[in-house]
Structure formats: C-alpha cells, structure tokens
Length: 141
Length: 141
DNA sequence: ATTTCTGCAAATGCTTTGCATTGCA
DNA sequence: TGCAATGCAAAGCATTTGCAGAAAT
Image (cartoon, rainbow over all chains, first blue to last red; front, top):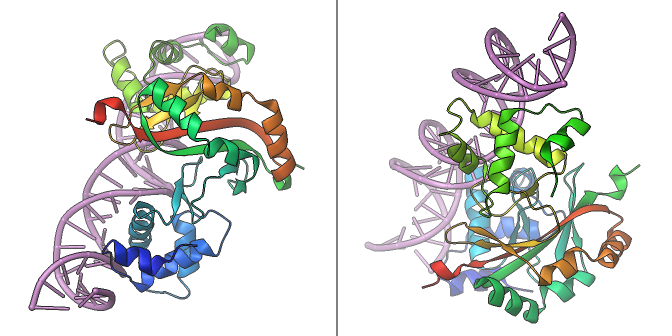
C-alpha cells in the first residue's frame, strides 16, 4: 500500500488535510464514488470543504498515481484507490460500479497484448480499462 | 450491414432525413465523432439542423442498436456505427479515437469470460468495452 | 518568506428539456 | 388526420477557472 504523504512530498506537492481526507475516503470504500459523493461524505467532518477542492484533489491524486479514474456511464467520473489492474462492472439501472477481479487480471496485465496493440496502432499505451455493462443482481428482480 | 430504414420501421420509429443523415455520417467515417463533430459535418447540407436533434438522433440509433456509444475521456461521448465487438485506443494528447482490431476480438467475444463475470459479480452483462489509453504516433514525436 | 492550496463565485461545456411547429405515416 | 420528430431557447449538471485570503514548507 502506498503512502500518500511520502508520495506527495516526493513530488514536491503540499500535504494538506483536504488531500489526506479525500484519499482516506477513497481508501476506505469500495463504492467507486464520484466527486459529489466524496464531497458529501467529507462535509460532516470538514464543513468548510469546497467541491472545487475535491475536484482539484482527485486530479492531483490521479496525476501522482494514487488513484485511478473510471469513465463509466452517467453521474460523472468515478475514483478508485486501487491502482493495480482490474476491471469494473457498471449497473445500467442504479449506476453502481463494482470491481470484477480475477479473470480480468490476465487481460489487463498481459504485456504481450499491449505489444500487439502498440504494433497495430502505433500508440504508446499507458493504461487500459475493461468495463462490463449490465444489470446488477439487486436491480434484476 | 444493417439497413437503417428497415430497422427503424420495424420498431415503429419514423424515418426522417435527419436520422438518415446522422447515420450516413457515422457509416462514412472512422473518426468516432462526438455530437458536435457530427453537427458540424451536417451543417452545410442541412442548414436548419439543430444540435438537439443530433443528440436525440444518436440516442435513437443507440437504442435500436445501429450505433454504439464510447465513453473515452474528454470531449463528450463518441459514436461508432460498427457494432461488432472491437476495442478502441484513445490519444490522451489529441483526443483521437481509433479502432484496435484483431487481438481484442478474442476477449470481447469470449462468452466464457462473460459467464465468469456473471458468476463472480451476479451481473447480467449486456455489453463490454475495452479501452487503451496512450499517445498516438503523430503526437509522439 | 515564499509558494502553493483552498474556498468561493462565476464561467464554461456538454447534454437535456419544454414547447410550438413541422412532417411522416 | 394523428402522432411523433424537429428546432429553438432555456435550463440543468458536471467540471473548470480566477482570484483573494489562508496554510504549508
């Protein structure tokens, strides 16, 4: 597990309570929240916290590699503090995002696949996302 | 290749010049345009065309399965008239989207993989997207 | 002391909506 | 003719920006 203070200091980015708090929220949930959800969770403990600060903070955390950003459907970008490769399932009814572990590691960690993509497209690949869209068990009754 | 008039009539959706035109644009390009790009391309031939109509039209085409929607990075949703499974590469510098064919078919058409995802997550999967993020050859000099 | 960050409010950009008019079936 | 689609303008969200005051190094 990465240490946020260390990581920020290394890159000469200031360690602030707001940054610590946003990262703590992401570390402590599996719900892949968007900015609004993070903001709502922080509000009780940090009444002065601004939504704009949350936006700026997730951006910083993303740039230093402490979180990854997910581009699934509606409701804004989602954030995930697990940065090792794994894929996600998105419920088209309730907009929930969950991890889909195990099998997908093979694909997302396959260096040979990245080589093939690079060879075919000429792109220098920096990251990969695998999304499954469907209906979650709770919505499927 | 699917026939748009037939498909729309089957679902009792009216065939209009605007719908034909939007679909024709998508059939005739590999650039995965967003709504604004489609609108700009239509303007010369359809001066009265409204941006809202383009939004509504891509939505209709998506719902009847004539196009697929891509959720890659900035610049709004992208549209693709190729609906057979294939993955995409996105250039983080110029926002270009290109197809990444061949290798990815194995993954995206793998019914066993969907079974595994279903078993692990309980989700009934309806579609899958595989995105590669990186820098395109043109931007990489 | 310097530089960066925060919080606020305003601005921006993409997308949706309401509604009168138009046009397909 | 009847119902659905279009076009326009306004509204709605998510996100970004500019800037003065506050906080971190």
